[in-house]
Length: 428
Image 1 (tube, rainbow, N blue to C red):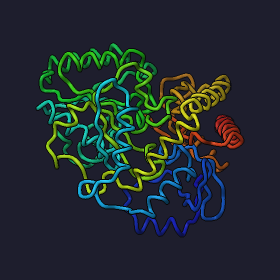
Image 2: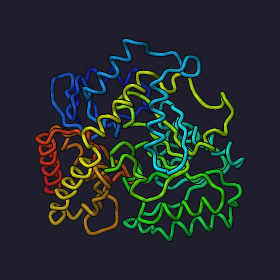
Image 3: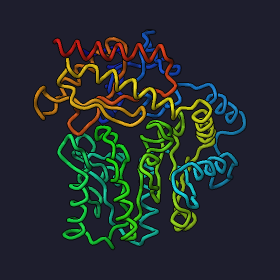
């Protein structure tokens, strides 16, 4: 089953756009508002993707649009390194205050999540004078060469792209459903220190508080504290990749708030700009200040339009109580999914904090991942007007990323479509 806005437009896309740019759907958006999108033929869809956790505040939030329009009337670009502007400073001040950690912080702005992670690694290496980096299997950090190397999933991100960057090691990420305990992950780190990489060689440990592409797998209670202790004992910079978890998605402004410890450096993007491209790196002031002037930055880094949008996004999250709303929406979604488990034994786990939720499917009665079932559910839902995304190393997980501002009737409609789609696939 393939839903297409226009076969003719799809043919043009196939002729003009590189095949490596994968597409989840063949729906060509024409208009969007909050949690709804209309294609070029006027068909309406409920958006449970949110541009992959970008429009947490909804498509075209009025406050974000107003802020961008006001900035557009002033100026669109000077390059902050050439002619700085106040709203860049204001946003840095706000993130320094909001990112977890009771210590002085400083911030830089970049354009994409991958660029934020690249800069975090640069900063950690410069500060420590070390080169090694530890990441986790199943993690996703981007598609540039360093971030592709850090990413713990081979297909489609690494296959055929040649040698990865050196001095990067991967550890198993705790996932009870897949038989990996927190103790297993920590013991693997201990073995790494004993056999392959002395701790004095390691500049940073980077991890997602909730793995994104890896399957929306939350770090278990206590794991972040253990990583924090190991970093402190060995002079290692702890980096929290909050690119997908940030900005109210997990029921907190940042997912690390669930764990009671702070990373030395936090990377963020996606939800920060409310639909405009911006990313940030916020960290301990002494670490962030270690690089020499000119060592950090970029021509478009902290573009004025994106900075204006980001300041508005922070206002909307606070004014509309989106952290609390994420927790409420996620609880209702998980409750609805749980009500189906007796009828659908393929649905083996429902997880995720706040409204960063996922459902994992196996072949009924086995531990074998069932990506075929997941694909059929997504296709059925799309036919009924609901856009869903998959994730997980085996492609057997559906992730739910609706805007946090979704209207109540639209949310209920989406839950009805989701339930009907799962049951339709189960019945064959």
